[in-house]
Image 1 (cartoon, rainbow, N blue to C red):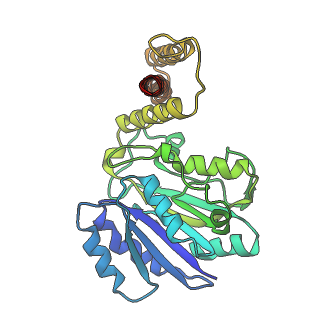
Image 2: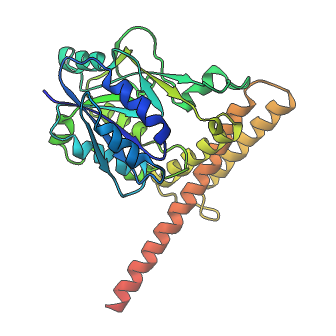
Amino acid sequence: MKLTYAFCTYNRSERLPSLVAAMRAQECPVPFEILAVNNNSTDDTAAILEGLAGEPGPSLRVVTETEQGIVPARNRVLNEAMSSDILVFMDDDELPRPGLLQAVYDALVNEGAECVGGRVVVDFRPHSRPDWLTEELLGFLGAVNHGEAPFWIKDAGTPVWSGNAAYAMRLFREDPTLHFDRRYNRQGSDVGGGEDAIMFRTLLDRNLKIRYRPDMVVDHFVEPWRLKRGYFLKLHYRAGVRYGRNELPAYERRIFGVPPFLVTQFLRQCGRMVAMQLREQPGVLRQAMNAAHALGTMAGYREHSVEKNKQHANAISRRAQR
């Protein structure tokens, strides 16, 4: 049996020595390799990885993905790990806790899971957690905690993300179309993405066996630029753009390229936000995030409509020229 333990990285060279060391320190019932996909980093990532590859322990295999973005990088991992039986994903701003690979092996081999995910614990060190950052907002920093007992995941209410997830690779060998969705790519300093949420939803729709294991744990270190209210607003705006662009159907009735009901939803969300602010109620930031998502949905829908109109006009022009 072959297991690949993989991460994608972009301009986080200072984190790589501790990350690779923690990955190599994992105990696993089968031998494993570490796979690093360098996504065109402009810092000294390549040199750091080259040095780490020569150190003792499980082998570190390094590849470079020249197409920018988290989706091409994740899909490169899938393609590089096709000959493996198990693929374990984590992110370059995380550290695995002891026992993670043992939990993965137990879930996929002994319990018969086809996908397994675990806990993601947000670590604010060396910074402090802002007073306004409530528990309900931690999920937007990647936190996952569905309790202390393992269970089979049956619905989207208990998701697992690719920052701490493992897959039986036969799923991808048997279906070459099963990859991370390119429409949800995130490049450079952009935020959000949603490619792992789409993958999770796809696996759910296929009624695959998805397991939650609380003993599969990573610590996720949060950079200071994410500990600002503006980050949460931008995250939801960008999520709304992707939703409006990729998931809404075409509507006949539109005003300036946007269905009227989307405008109504945005105004309603803004009204609730203002009312909560005037009454000094808690949860104003969360409501502002809803409004940002609604605004992004309008922008994404209009962007998609403009693109479709251009494609339609170009098609007519090509037919006229024939």
